[in-house]
Length: 335
Image 1 (cartoon, rainbow, N blue to C red):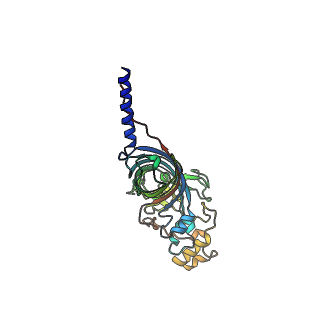
Image 2 (image 1 turned 135 degrees about the vertical axis):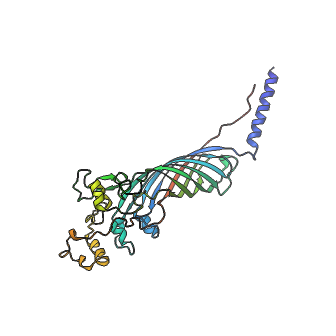
Image 3 (image 1 turned 120 degrees about the horizontal axis):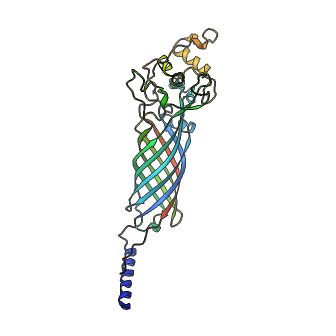
């Protein structure tokens, strides 16, 4: 009986050893990672046709945690949770040629995006069959889809004296119908705060030891909404919006806000310069044309999203710490 059991154990050990030594069988395994990096939005408030300055002026951050399952030497599946902060501000376009109208619009926003993504990863260099023997450097590309929640907010002007909010307070823009969405006579519905995007990018991993990698990743998100920044359509008349809510009117028509809520800069000189060049030279003289005489320049139906014809995108970079989880050893059951 003892010899029989020892023989079974010997066979099981041989089979187990063979499984480990079989180089043609890829060892599926998993890893978890933590990432931190930068975030940049490009859209109606931040034109992508001046990428360097737009990126420098609006740099923010993202943090992420993710899980990856390595199915084959080339292909892995990834699920990630990412928190992204993005910003944009028309006042940073002051004096930029061809973007004077965007400066006059005087819109700004901040948005904290919570993203759940599902990505396929393709390794440009084949992984070893054993994760401990993976290459020192592994470049890869990824593509997938994601669901995200967002909520653009902006600061209330210092000149606001209503009861709905306080000057300088950050308020959510979607409930304010800043383009008249959802109001009587407006065919556009309010945009959704839950949306979808498509992540696409490139990454690089560097092996530190048997279980730990460090890496860098860069990717864009093309969104299926143009309202990450609360700008995507046309102006509604100030008077119509004021009848619904004074706060909605002043947040949807900020062109004559003399002190920028976002920066505290005085805008009057640049406003007068725009009116003098595009409406009437008389507006350059404050003694003849006080602020109360400024004309309505963004009438109902005027395009509000003039800087970009594409949906909003954001760009993420991430420095990553990756921990590989050792797979379980599967040996035959000994009876």
